[in-house]
Each structure stands twice: as C-alpha cells, then as structure tokens.
Image 1 (cartoon, rainbow, N blue to C red):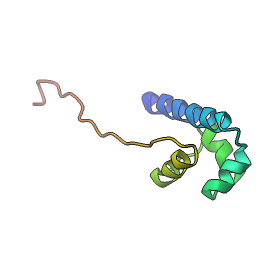
Image 2 (cartoon, rainbow, N blue to C red; image 1 turned 45 degrees about the vertical axis):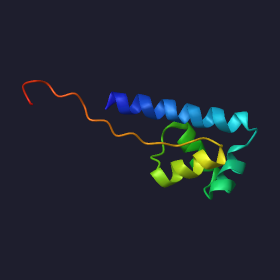
Image 3 (tube, one colour; image 1 turned 90 degrees about the vertical axis):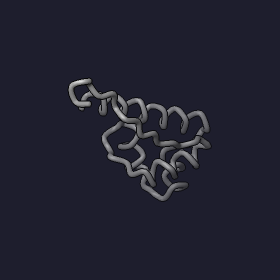
Length: 80
C-alpha cells in the first residue's frame, strides 16, 4: 500500500510540473479536460482518485504519452 501512495505522489508531481511547464493554470487545465479547478487541485495533491479516462485526457492536454504496463510479479519457487 505504501508503494501505491508513493507512486500516486510521483504521478501528482509529474502532472503539476507538466501543467506549469506549459504555463497553464489549474482552472485552464480543468476547462480543457472538462473538470473543475478544485478537482485538478486534488489530483495534483494526490488526494483524488483518478480514472484511466481522466489520466488519458490529462496526458493529451499536457502533450504527454500515457501508457499502462501490467507486469507479472516474480513468483517464489515455493509457489511455482
């Protein structure tokens, strides 16, 4: 669970940095993707759960690629 929180915090920072790099306000970004400024604030602070659809919209608005990777965990020999 701690790993998930850390990854969420990293994603939130990446989104905030990308928005600022483009010179967009939270309100402007929200208008582009169809959400409120308050929701962008929560996303950027890592307190808002975000759907894949919203992440795709954010990536497109920020001119980023968005990919999801599913990797199988290494299994211990005992479970194999």
